[in-house]
Amino acid sequence: MDKPFKLKQFSVNQDQCAMKIGTDGVLLGAWTSIQKHPFSILDIGAGTGILSLMLAQRSDAQIIEALEIDDNAYEQCVENFEQSPWNDRLFCYHASLEEFAEEIEDQYDLIICNPPFYSEDYKSKNPQRDLARFQDAMPFAHLLESVVSLLSKHGTFCVIIPFSEEKKFIELAQDFSLFLNRKTHVRGTPSAEKKRSLVEFSFHENTPEISELIVETTRHHYTEDYINLTKDFYLKMS
Image (cartoon, rainbow, N blue to C red; front, side, top):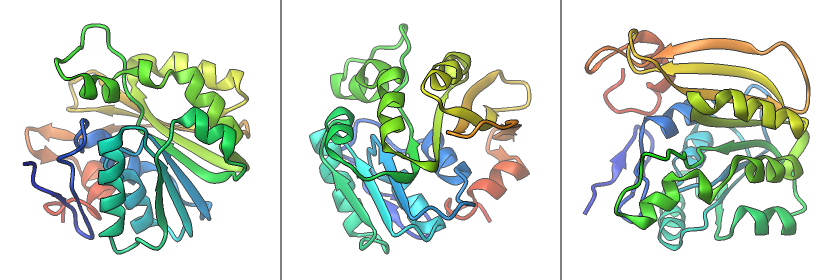
């Protein structure tokens, strides 16, 4: 059985989830801006609930709702919410994004998503993991269409995607009148290729802020930027 993933202010059980907690989720949860003081937050494809929990720790949002279609992951997410210090502000729906977007009339000030990534050369022997990992479970156009109906007029949408998908994703978002406001390219080490893009969108067009984040200088020697971003969460980051 997988041990709970312990962070400074909460811990997360993940033994029932196909996709375990990784750097991507923690990066997105720490990078997402809360400068606009969102009242309501939606986490699409919550998995363990790590993103919602991080945003509960960081923000004063009164409503933090998550969406998870996989039965086991949904049950685990609910359990993780219930045992957290913010259980009065967290709620998980067991539904597909399509069902949810059709039925819910509420709109959210902040929407976050760590979507499945599609890679033709990657298929595991675990269908549940493949469902969580693969973009065919949540095509980008389908995701953006739902975000547009669920995002409030002045709201923001934050997502982490493979760097190789970034250009296509930003162009597609623009077709839905979602404009890039901020992006950060992530490299594992200074000499590594860009691996991920953290991107923020809104309905308002302006000059995007562009930056880069390097995770490590050498193995287990983290950069100051990465430490500053994640130190409120990781136990070993001072």
